[in-house]
Length: 221
Image 1 (spheres, rainbow, N blue to C red):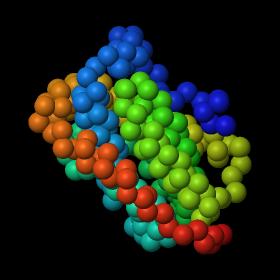
Image 2: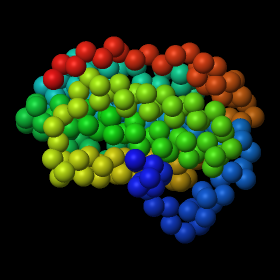
Image 3: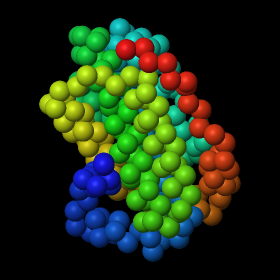
Image 4: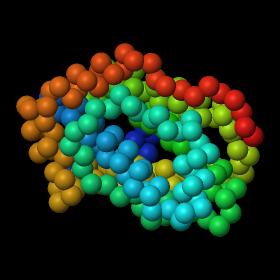
C-alpha cells in the first residue's frame, strides 16, 4: 500500500540537484554503491548520537524496552561515515514528559521508517543500477513486520501524520547531507572509495546472504 501512494525519496530535490539525482544511474555503479553505504552508516551513527542526547528517563526506556530494534543493518560494513545530525524536531517529538507517549512514538517511528526505507531501497536498486539493494529492501520490510508484530501502538490519525512528517524531515536531512559539499563531499569520497574500498561493497553483498536477526515475536502490549 505504501508504494502505491508515497514517493520513494520523501524529499524534494529542486533544480540542478534534482535533475542530477534523476540521472544517478549514469554514474559508475561502484560510485553509487559507496554513496549508498556511506549514507546508511551516517544514519545509523546519527541514530546512536540522537539516543545519547535524550533525557535520562526516556533514554533508559528506549534502550531497555525495545530489544527488537537493536539488531538493525548488521550487514553494513564499517567505512567512511559523513557527519549527520538529526533535526532538533525529532528530539522534541520523542523526548516528552510522558514515557508512555515517548514509547509509542518511538515504536511507530521505527516501524514506519522501515516501511519507507524498504520502498526507497527498491527504488534505488533501479535508479543506481544496484540490484543487490532489492535484498536490502526485503530485510527492511522484514524488520517493519517484526517491529509491528512486537507492538502496534494505538495511534490517532493526527499522531500517524506527525510520525510521517518527522520522518520526512529526517529524510530531507539525509539528502541535504549528501548534497552539501561543505559537510563531507559525498561525491569526492564516493569516487575515492570506488577506487580504494571495493571490499566494502563485497562485504555488504556477502552480508546479505546471512539471515537478518529478528527477535521472536512475543507481543508485550
